Figure 1 (cartoon, rainbow, N blue to C red):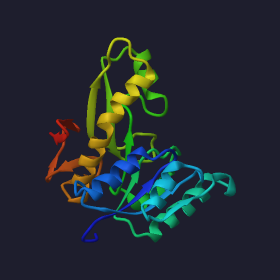
Figure 2: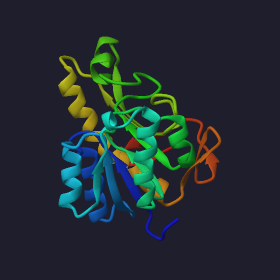
Figure 3: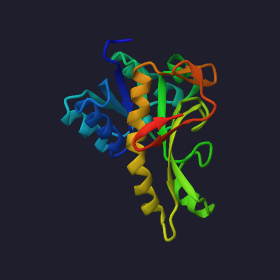
Figure 4: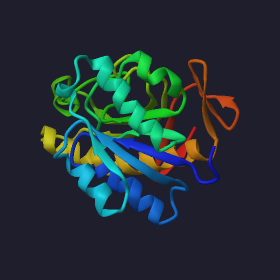
Length: 220
């Protein structure tokens, strides 16, 4: 691993999580550097954020490839070219194939807006409301070939309040999503978090439950 860990970020949308990473790096809260940003939508604002910060950014269009596996192979070839230590899926909306992610096992993570394993996939906030949940939140997990199914590293929880709609709940989750992601990435980049088989280790001990964010710090 490089002296300062190198991150490749995958993003499909506006890039608020990417911006949180860039801000944390600039402020010394995350000891890493973003080596490249990659996506599947040429007009994604995340790519513009990257370029404005002087970071190489590239989008590949899935329709330009004959199959998902060919697209994934091209995407990860581009990612590998910037020699990242870790890959961060930060609002990346495409499912990644097992063959593409296998070489990156334990080095690719995703931020997801629910308390996994609840509400995998899309529309998590509306689904949490429909289910009558008392609390909701966000999870950072290692990526596997299963949709939002890899081992969970850390979570942040928020209450579901009377009168919440999906937008209000989404904003409350986003407020904890960013510190959750940065805190977990710092542990990953400093070697305190590792994947051992199907288990997450924290400071050499297997976690029996995901780390929890409290007062912007992660605790077992």
